[in-house]
Length: 152
Ligand code: MG
Image (cartoon, rainbow, N blue to C red; front, side, top):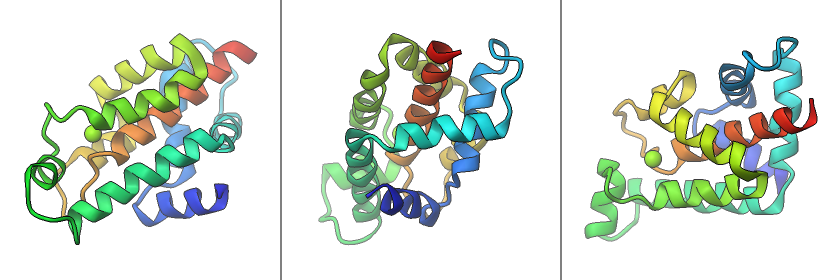
């Protein structure tokens, strides 16, 4: 399952290293010894959780359906246009962050606002629907940052 999620992320254009870079962006100021190896380790720990895996599967499935066989209608319109008022992509991301406490939630809010690195790239308009993916990536990075904050 973990492997499946890693491959799905890769297929959608996100490497674990990209998420690790977001962790460094969030946490470098507080953990001076932080490097990509340490950040990657925390990202992998987050990806081990079944609930995180379910969020990845669900979100990416909806993104892919919006690009392909989803019937025309308000849901497809919201997903394809990444309508800011849709909001359920953020709710799915909270599902990940809730497993890692308030530091994960506040970090997610921050990174979702600033949209650094891969998150910014995913947000640029492309053929691919990334409505859920950008929030999933932000939530995984924020959760890994929370793990770092608590364990170091
Ligand atoms: Mg989104």
